[in-house]
Image (cartoon, rainbow, N blue to C red):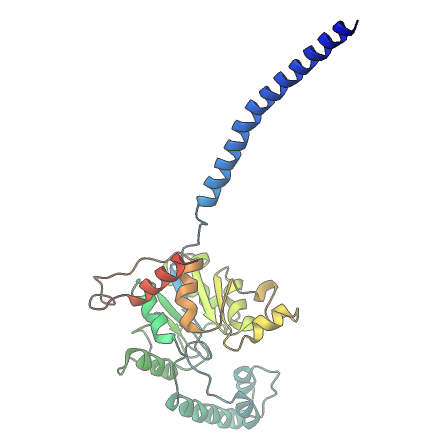
Length: 296
C-alpha cells in the first residue's frame, strides 16, 4: 500500500513538472514579443504637424510695447471697456477728428521709439531661410508696419511691409477686414497662400485676442508670455488663457526660444542654403537646435 501511494505521488509530480515546462515555453515567446513590440513603439517618432506659414501679431510680439494705451483712452475720452477705434468712429465729426489726431500723434511718437523684441530678427531669419511665408495682422497703421520692416531689414523699406510680410494686414489695409479675434484675416491669408488654416501658426502675446483669433480659424497657436503672467495664472488655476478657446498649443517665454520650440513641436522645411536668405551665411540657429535636441 505504501509503495502504491509513493508511485501515485511520483506520477503526479512528473505530470505537474511537464505542465510547468510547457507553460514556460508558451510564456517566453509571448514575453519576448511584447518586449519587441514595446521597443518598436518607443522607437517610432511622434508625428509633428507641418507648418506652411506663420502669422504674427505686432505690438508686444515683434516689437516692445511703447504706447500708453491708458493715456490714449483718457485723452480720447473713451471708456477702457470699449474698443477705442470703434468708439471714436461713432463720435461726432469734430470729436472724431480730434481723437484721430491724438492717436496719430501718439503712434508717431511710438514709431520713433520702436524697438524689436529680443530674438525677433533671429526668428524671422530662421523662418525666411526655410522659405516659410510670413504674414502680419495688426491694428497698427501701414506706416508703423513699414517702420517695423525697416528695423528688420536694417534699411528703408516699402511702406506696405511686403518686404518681409505678405500680406501685412493693418487697420487701413484694403480690403478692410474685421479686427482680431474675428478670424476673417486668417482665412484671407490662407486663401492668398492657397493652404488650409490648419497648416498655419499664429504667434501673438494675447490669449483673448491673438490665440482666440488663431483658434477661431483652426490654426495652431504660439503664445509669447514674456512676463510668464499667463503661464503662472494657468498653473494657479486662475485662467489667463489657460483653457478653452484661448489655450495656446505652445507657450514661449521669449522669442529667443521660439526656433527651438518650433523645431520640437512642428515640421518646417529645411534651410534653403542656396536661396537668397541662406546663400552666404551659416545656419547657426539650426546647428544649435540640432545640438540641443540631441541632448534631450
